[in-house]
Length: 204
Ligand SMILES: Nc1ncnc2c1ncn2[C@@H]1O[C@H](COP(=O)(O)OP(=O)(O)OP(=O)(O)O)[C@@H](O)[C@H]1O
Ligand SMILES: Nc1ccn([C@@H]2O[C@H](COP(=O)(O)O)[C@@H](O)[C@H]2O)c(=O)n1
Image (cartoon, rainbow, N blue to C red; front, side, top):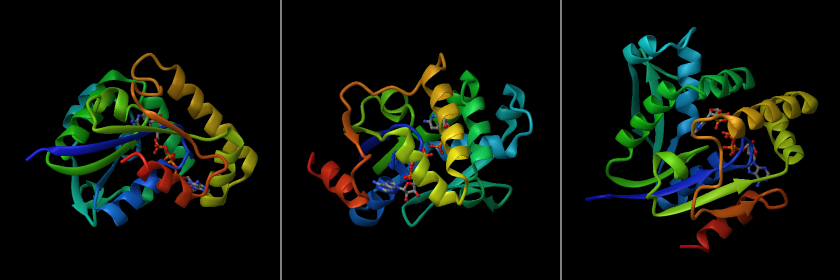
């Protein structure tokens, strides 16, 4: 048996994870959120060196079609949501050894079955031969509005934090955020979650 892979890339707050979760609930796809792997590393390691990373035992399990990341028996998914962790994740994501670690783990998980994978380089680097690729985008102001509502943080703080991450993610030398070759671009700024989902489904 082989895998069927959908990739969804785009900047923070464009709505990638939300759509991936709908693909799990409605269509039975396992969701791999590669951002959560970067966040897990940022959360666990005080200093991210190649040596420390090589020793890192980050486990995973699939539950209700979501990939849970586990360290020393503790599920990390819900405790790594803050913008502080996200900013550290964005900084360590510049390192080649960190990216190799994440890519290897994501490919190990997506061995057999139906997977929807979101991130910044899911379709450009991790799964360049994915069955179908999407790139979700939205205006910075709308993404910040969504994020500040979700995390109950100040709007201007969200603008600052998201623009800093956008800059780091698009400007880094290795695997920067780009529209993957062959990806379908959807601007979600003025679309509801249901409208985005239905638009994506119309391509199948
Ligand atoms: N089309 C939409 N309209 C309004 N709100 C949305 C839409 N899509 C997502 N949201 C909301 O925006 C917030 C961010 O969405 P989500 O976490 O899916 O973004 P993301 O692209 O996965 O971000 P990140 O890369 O940081 O994980 C969530 O609170 C979500 O409910
Ligand atoms: N494929 C990816 C996924 C994520 N990153 C970096 O991690 C940060 C956190 O990601 P979220 O999707 O959870 O917000 C993000 O800002 C990126 O710097 C990445 O480089 N590649």
